[in-house]
Amino acid sequence: MPTKADLFRKAMRFWATGVTIVTAEYEGIQQGMTVSSFTSVSLSPPQVLISLAQGARTHDLITRSCNFGITILDASQQEICDCFAGRVPDDMDRLEGLETITLVSGVPLLKQGLAHLDCHVVTIVGSGTHTIFIAEVLSTQSGEAGEPLLYFNRGYQKIQKP
Image (cartoon, rainbow, N blue to C red; front, side, top):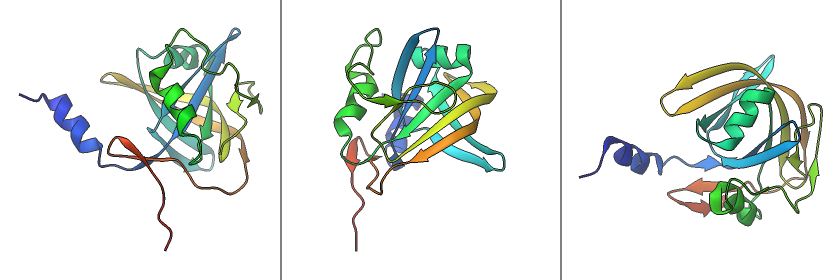
């Protein structure tokens, strides 16, 4: 018999999202993970929020450093998304071999991507198995126009143009 969590997970598959890579760095250790629980909160000051599982290594680095980076992925970055979604063990450096940049805080961001946000945590809220990090956006950078990587019903999707 399905649990409430199983039923909830099944229902949430029908919520289409963009895909980001959230990265963090603390005392020379860097880590990143695929995150679709991301949204804007405020335009003035510019703020975003992410929600991360409390057991994630990236969660620990953000909690310690109070900074994180967001790379918004484009449609060609499915393989990178898969890597950061856990198909590479947590104890391995998922950023190894990828070109990165930094903006203000020094957090690594994937060089390729539609946009980058460098963020400083201003509020932390624990809820259930996850933590919500609300952060002020310190700096942004947008790449060239492209198509976003979308996730819907356990698979990647593309925007269908008219």
